[in-house]
Image: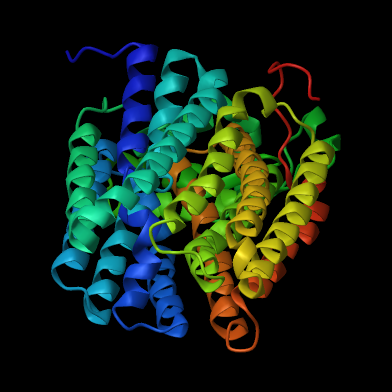
Length: 473
């Protein structure tokens, strides 16, 4: 019987996996790589759209796949695709090469999205350590941001020594190491597997409640008087108030179903929970907008270049924004208990900082003697904003995991990722159109202003903390 790694060992592996996976020097300069090979801002935005569209199409299918097969194997496959994508960019630096590389990167991202979170949460749940999830997730996000900072800072000497080629091959090497770390993960048991959904049903509903659910009526007990305890069925799963359980009609089928049938069941069960259960639905939506809006970070390098910053210094300015997200990640364990109102205030502040920072950086375009002072101030404000929004995203993601109670955890998480890609596509489309009329700084300021309406939605969309997890701020 394989040895189960300790909680500390699991944490270290998770941190290394996310950290090495983002130790990619190309992150700092790939927008400039495209521009220096003759691509316009519109073409670059189209590449970002290809990237997000690929993730969009594969997000939920890959999540259901992760609820059906080995999550560790999918994480390793993701690393292989990422490695191949960066190698293609280095060997074939053309629009076609960049586009195919983004397809591979988008597929890799879809395989990780939901899969990593579900593997981590289920492993912790099997140990009875679910309360550690937000803290460990914060550590992994911090590791990612630290690695991005290191990669970005390293991009400057790498570019000076070997140009884009050295940066590209260094990125390929780190992606390959990331793949090897994925193979070291334990194959954590799912809290509820596809073959055990009927056991969840036995635990969550009484025989009377199940027979009532089959008839489409409320169970004959005191829960019938509670508000928002709607019961609905679709032949595959039953939603009883805020819980998703399986239907009796399909229990025998699942015990003998093949992989494709189990996969299809996971898709329907996970999507059903994401749509019908209020707390889960709200968490899915909040996580999606907080993730999707950060797609504006793809234009940070272009902002710096557009106002006159030299290519060698661009990574240092972009690094300021990553330091902000690093701080937000590290503080996730301390802010996990924040209320929806507190998060709304924080996101609103983040929007104001981002808008102001983008405009301040834009002033440098017409003040060559103060380029580095103005961009330094502007990117510092943007970094603070980025950290606030990143922290909110980590907390929202942890609350979503606590709210999920059905068997398709990776699928539900992937639904949020799917909607996040929709938001990211909207960001890319807006940037492609807006930059034909306005400067990059104005375009980013307008994108940052969208955090203000997001802040208004936060109090009602942030899922509550689970009972017994401590007082909410």
